[in-house]
Structures are given as C-alpha cells and as structure tokens.
Length: 439
Image 1 (cartoon, one colour):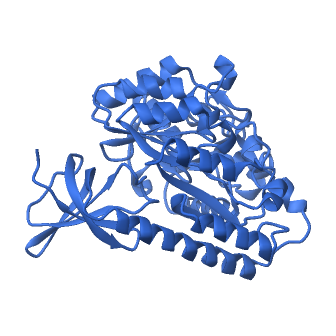
Image 2 (cartoon, rainbow, N blue to C red):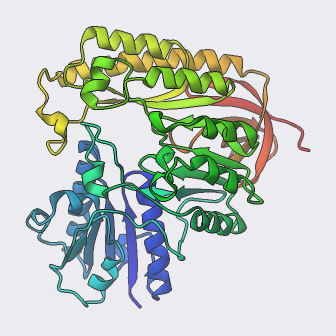
C-alpha cells in the first residue's frame, strides 16, 4: 500500500482536521509517515488567514514540488489556500496533482484513488468537523476539540467567513462522545477551539450553549484540564462564567482576542465597541481567572491617541498574556480599502511598545505567584549534568504561546504525567518552580 505524508500548516483547527484525515487514510489502508521523502503521496493542509500564513503555505508547496521533481511523488493541497485562490490555484501551482478547499477535505481520497480527474475542483467552504477516525499528532496527554466551523462575524481585517463559511456547531452529543474517546485514550487536557468558541450552539439550540457543553465535558472521567480558546467578547455569557467558576477541571483561563481597546479602531475593525466593559465584567465575576488576548497594531486609521489608549488598557493588568501582531493587509479583506494606512515601521514600533507594556504586567503577575503551589503536566525531561531539566504547563499556560513551567530537579519525571510544584519566579515568560513532595 502507498505511503502518505500529511503536512498541517497554521492553527490548531487545521491540526485537528489533519488528524481526522490521518484517521481516514489509516482506515483506508494507507501507510502513514512523517517524512515526505519516503512518501508516495504528500497532502499539504494549508492556512492563509494572514499574509505570513499564506507565504508559509506557498513556500511549503514549492518545497514539496521540488521534492516531486526528484522522486515519484503525488502532491495534493487542501484547505484555506485553494479556497482563497479557487480556480487560480492550478495556474499558481501547475505541479500539484489535485486540490480541494476547506469544506471537502475527504475528497482528497477520491483524487488519490483516481476516481476524479486531477483537475477536479472541490471548493465548498466549511471544514472537516467530525469523524469517527482520528490519529493524534500531538503527544499525550493534550488534545484539541474543535466544536464548530466557520464564522458569522464581519471583522474587516478577517477573511475567515469567506474561507470557512457560516458558523456551524457540532452537537453536544457528538462532542461529548469524541471527548470521552480521547479521555479513554489517555488525554487529560482538552483544549476547546473554533473560529469563535463562545458562539457555540446558537445555530443548533437557539442560544449560546458553550456553558452546557462545558458542563457536560467537565463530568467526563479523567479530564483534568479543560481549556477555552478563541472566545469572542460579545458572546461571553454570565452562564459561561458561572460554569467556569463551578467546575474545578475547567481551567480558570480564557483566551479572548480583543484586537484593540480604542473605539475608533474597533469601529473600523467592525468589532464590539464594549470590549473593555466585557473584560472588566469577566475579571469581576471570576476574580482568579487568567486572561490572554490578541492585539493588532498599525490598523488603518490608528492614531497616536489610539495606541496610548491601548497601552493604558494593557497596563491596567487584565491580561497575563497577549500576542501582539502588526496589521496584515490581505487584499481580500474589506480593511484593505481603508484609508490612512500606517507604515510597517510605525506598526512595528507600536507593536514593541505594547509588547513591553504587556511584559511589565506579566512580571508583576509572575512575582505575585511566587511560593504558590500548582499542578502541572510534564512535557519534557532532559538530563543536564547532575540535574534534570523539566518543562511542562499548568492551568494558565496554553501550548506554544504562554511559556512553560521550568524546573531543575534532582529526580527525573515522566512526560505526560501530572505533578505538583512550588513557583519560585520567572525567566522571561517561563515560570520557574521546584518540585513538591508528591502526594
């Protein structure tokens, strides 16, 4: 049977879709490999949300096509880049053997089997949301659960609705079944993702239903951390906050991208204008919650006064973490037509200003954590002389973006298991700690 390499680019939502595809391919008898050089078929699942992601996808395709020129290799491309370029994709990458958009990823198998012409186009927007087959690509005990696809918002800088279609929730029953299966397989940290997690269920149940879903998931035996990402501000309900407070295994953590604080900029972004009040409400109702956000600097029309307002908001201390990004002007987004564009240099300067302000907040929060005991999952343990360097994450650290718990221990630990530690300080965005006597 042929060997297949699946290359997933972009965000965790793409990762989940690639894991579903891996499961489907495995069920069909294909041999899976992580090495494209030893594969007979390569499938590249692309992202093009911002220009950097689009460039990464284009470069990856070119690299795999170079490999194709050296060996017998079929190359298929799926996801956001074909969805964005549509029929122009074939002209841009004539060496690709077939491509599909975001909503019909399983059609890759039909192309691979020769049941469709190599030029066959499948460009219905959407996503691969549900499958009884899934092969995890990330190490245990962490896995993502994608609860919905698409987006109904009209943020002027974003092209996701055109790439992924309207918001479509999975049922609570199907999500609970998948979460139960993941837990049985050894998953202990479940990370809830979607383009917008807090709008979950409105299309199915006629109400924002993330609180109902989380309450269901929290009762699944074995799940120690349930983490919420990609929350949209205006659909954070009191019921959701109450559920976060109620269940001990729902992390007191929320990723809630606000993008900016100035109403002038938020209006041009077509984002909620009451964002600041929403953040204040969350912090008031759940005082011990740890918040992370995403911010954009250099948006068209952003003034010096706007950036000072954002700086003041960040310094107020609501967020422990923030990802700050310079505005990426995709021509397909409506913001591309806005006047008063900001130079890349000024956008970068403003990004650094906000990053520095946020790091000052983080240092203060990290200092307040000293001597506190926390439970964490160990992810790595490496021998370094007489010591072992342990790294892992606790409830307020999402993978890859929030730093790690770092411990220098005389004794080794087992990756994938949970331990207790006492916080001693920080090194950059990493939290330093020492192992506690285990219970």
